[in-house]
Length: 336
Ligand code: GDP
Ligand code: MG
Image (cartoon, rainbow, N blue to C red; front, side, top):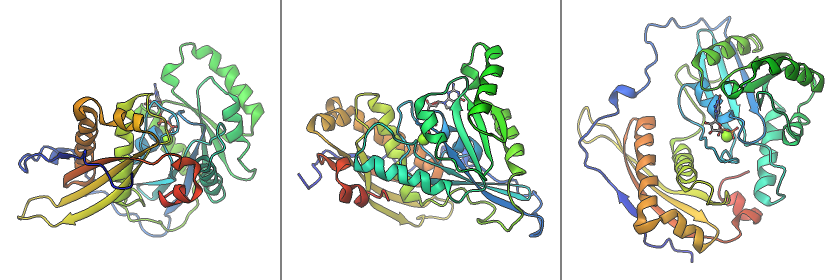
């Protein structure tokens, strides 16, 4: 059971097309560099129950997909930092796993520790809920917020609210639940709202030197992002069938310099998808290997864009029953 079974899909296209060149985000070269004095920088935590749109918000704020999202709850498992520098202000966002209340296993325990850890040292908290809704799970997260730290209520998914008139009384009610510093009804998918949120957040950040370089997007390694990207495709393409207790381990991440001038570097990645049961494995592989092949292709295409490299991706599926209940194993898969 330990050795990865040989159902790898070698998803290796020819080294010809350079279709992604145009999409590499370029920072405006002419932007004036802010003088060191007068700079602002601070940490902004994005918290909320699963599935309210935290990772979507984070990606929109950073301007790049660094945190994975899905319709399925509990996709984000690690704390992920996203950095965006605008003029003299550097915003350092921390996306967190949704706080877990339903199961008491070792994986969820580790996830909850990550959330409370993040909250203890930030300058501003974005408490994200779905506009017009508030449930027991939202309340559990709200309880974690300590007084003395500014908190904005981000009422996300405003585009899904049909009766806008009912929002005012709801906001008033929210104001009674917690002394929020500001209310921000918005949609993480609306660029105008994202711009407005930056303007609001900026004033809460202290004057101090930047923590990261002007162009840095995240503190996470490419290897880490590769694993997250596989995980996103896995969840998206298996729908609700696959239990969330499956994970991805990156076994190999090797870079090679470009072979010719003007060519991209080559990154060779081997990933293992760890599932709990044989039935899950069959689900991941799909009929005739169709599904795992698609997971591989979609992951590769996105990673090539994100890393500006040519990517060779090899994937395996392994069964390890009970890993999410096993504390040592949870740690060995990279959860604190
Ligand atoms: P998280 O668990 O809080 O990180 O939530 P995700 O960012 O993974 O998002 C969960 C789902 O909500 C995804 O299907 C997103 O596309 C969707 N979503 C996020 N923000 C918005 C929004 O502003 N409007 C709408 N309609 N959907 C959104
Ligand atoms: Mg998330």
